[in-house]
Amino acid sequence: MPYKVLELLQTREIREKLTKAEEEILDFLEKNFSRIPDITVLEICKEAYTSQGSINRLCKKLGFAGFSDLKFSIKEDILEREKYKKESITNTLFFIENINMKEGKKLSQVLKDTPRILLYGLGASKITATYLQRQLLYLGFQVIFISEEKMLENFNDFTLLVISSSGETLRIKHVAKSFKERGNTLLSITKRGSYLDKLSDCSFTHNISIDKLNVITREQQLHMIIMVNELVNLLHFG
Image (cartoon, rainbow, N blue to C red; front, side, top):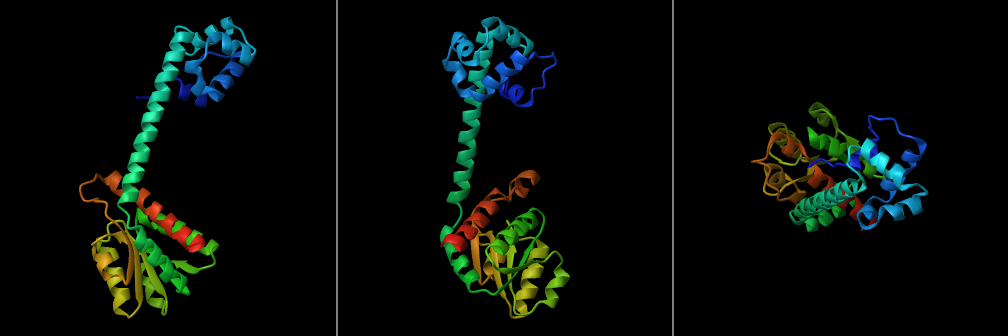
């Protein structure tokens, strides 16, 4: 359900021209949004230094019958916002519960003893990999993001950290296998039990099924970002 009032207050996309007094009332409503269902129009008049008539005229310009109608819609917006927050928290907790945090600590310990690091990722995971590179550079690590497979052939005595949500794409498999066969150390942030996980010397894994998800959902990286942030925190504070 789209918000009836909250979006109006945030965007101010209102067809009718508003007076300065009405703009100030909007400012008050936005600042005190969560309180509005529990206070009277007279209390708003007193706190916002305005009149009941000004509030009623503004309500009509916003498309409501009056203040009671506006108040009811604000209450619906608040309930919808709280519902969305709860759903978001539930989704995030689901991701966290399906991440092996103990493996994150082990990977952080390996990285602390790794002088030179290469990072590799494809698609959406490429964005996550470049984000991790920035964080590692801030922490003083020598880290290079590899954008092309060919570049890996020119690096010796480096450790490769591959980021892949599925750990099963053909290019990821080829890169990981080729690098490992040259006697190098392979690390990963990936799905538990995947080809990449099994091939890695050390991996930080999640257990979130992505096989049956649609394309957009498969590309989402919230669980990978959570893992990267956990790793960075362990390196920084652990």
